[in-house]
Length: 300
Ligand code: NDP
Image (cartoon, protein in one colour):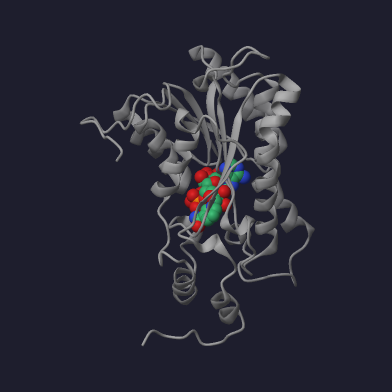
């Protein structure tokens, strides 16, 4: 069981007083992650998003964790490069390097107004926006932070202690592993995140001579703004298709993200962690029945 101290801090040594960068930390899963990192003793959490992160920052004040917001549109290359430069200024100002990067921000068909449209009206611009936000943005942000030597690390070519290896946690989706007939471009962009993540540790070592562990979390359906427009009948079917028969919470995903940022997973890299109530076990025939307009069997 996780020990919670009277001040609300959980295992204060797991994250070693580090600095963490969380994209999309102002809402949903990202915001729950910011909160959890603070609860586990993060010194500072830097949030990158388009709109303000004031509320998320106020939320972590009681844990003596500094919150810092940098405006960033990950779908825009110059905004991403500028944000990386701002991160550099901030970590230099406090004399630290980054212990963990959580590439959480993302969009779905909801943000592009294409929910329910599979192929007919989807053009190149739509596909590019999906990939720019969900794959190219985090991929480039990571490259910008690496190029600026902002990750905490042991001297190149030395064997590091476990707490000298920083973490990257990328948020993909159950839809990056299995298609679910809700939009192929989101699924493909999230599949790209998985494949990229697997390459990070070896590539960084080859190029820079030090270690970063990199893992990916694949949430199933989670109760956030992203899923709040799912019609009740489809929501019921998605829950029925999930062995644990419910949507997950942002806090459940955040707990696994913090675990992957911590020394407790010091020998884990390139791993794909499911936080999906079992939905990722395979394509559920009930979803195909739903799409085909077949009435869903009722209990009893
Ligand atoms: P929300 O819609 O609640 O939050 C999305 C976050 O991404 C916001 O903080 C938003 O901030 C940020 N964001 C979106 N576009 C950009 C951009 N161009 N540049 C910078 N930031 C951006 O979503 P969730 O919390 O539900 O999702 C978080 C991650 O989890 C996403 O990657 C999503 O794909 C993934 N996921 C979610 C699931 C779910 O069921 N909720 C299931 C599986 C995966 P702002 O608008 O201010 O920029």
